[in-house]
Image 1: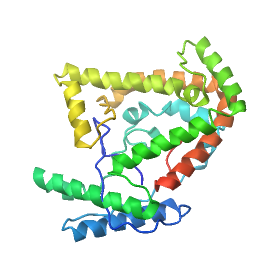
Image 2: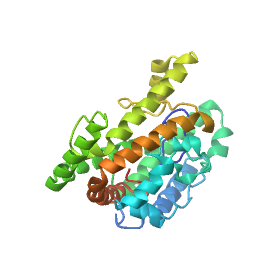
Image 3: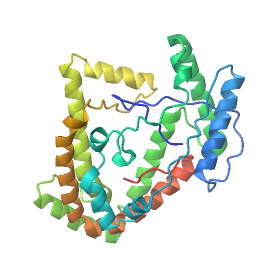
Image 4: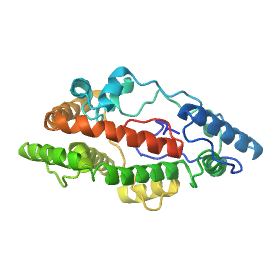
Amino acid sequence: MRPTARTLLALVLLTGCAAEPATPVDPAAPSQDRHRQMEAAIGDCMKQKGFKYNPDTQPSGQKTSEQTRREAGDYEALRKHREKYGFGIYAGYAYPGDKQAGGVDFSEQDPNNPIMMALSRVQLESWRATRDTCYSAAVKEFTGKTVRSESDLYEQAEAAREQVQARELNGDARLLDLAAEFGDCLRTKGVKVRSLKPTAVASANETALREEMYALGEKQRTDRGVNLPDRMRTLAEERGDTGGTVHLLPSLSPGEARPYLAREVKIALDDLECGRDFYAAFKPRQRQIYDRVNREFGRDDGPAS
């Protein structure tokens, strides 16, 4: 299942719900079919427990030919995208109505928002706890995975993806050679490359920019008198996360975001020039891993980078 873009200042997920565990279905089943089946199971479970629930059956958008080419490491397609969106970090702020921007898409609304907004605080807490239970059972039924909530599933899936990438990509001799060339080029442009492992080099610039964005979000909150550590701890507790980090995103108007995006675009294009050969070999392999892990965890297809 895909994460719905219902978070604004914090990367916080509403957690989920489901029915009695059964034999896992075929992991090769189309993700959208399984998504609908899981949502139907969650709805049935919620109804049995006395709660209203609107299954989220919004279809995933079909990949465009340009997106497919980017995922295959095509240089021209990657350059065209980066010229406007960079890495997709500040583009969501600069182009709030553009679904390709890679930011938070507020056009996709949780169909359960009206239900949740009509509940008291106590009722909402009970609704969410029940959805967690039902979501967990649905995941067990359709994937065989044991999770506590929706956020737990995503954390497990991301951990599995990282393990597979570390094993299959960071252990590939050809990719290691290309990553070394890519890293050397980045260093000539002043980029701090902490590791020459393929996965690290591929995300070096993007990781640095995201860390800057999170720092900006923290500064904004501090400037407005919010005790950030306490607030982040509260948000983590609310989502049942005892070990993860909750990043607060900055609040930026399109005009405020454009200078940040302009700098990001330049960095993204320099990154692409250095990694042209690397991305052509790395991205198709990365996409295969994403697809494999997504199927295993019953997730919809998502971008590989």
